[in-house]
Length: 86
Image (tube, rainbow, N blue to C red):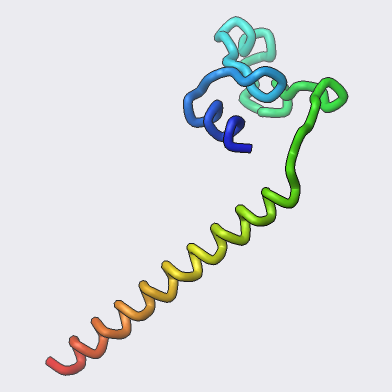
């Protein structure tokens, strides 16, 4: 998953997952910017996804976001108390 994200962020090619299209290729597709026009057929893909690891990463990100949300709420509550005290 990280390799796919890295290829996307770098606008680079990742065999079997992404490709950088030339303007000629886009012209051949009538300048369509619909992603599915450029997607590799699924039967050609060799998917190696560790679902357990993906779920753990999603849970970690969820906990991180929840913690950030709680810290933000705490700071906002203190700010409101300070403003009401003035």
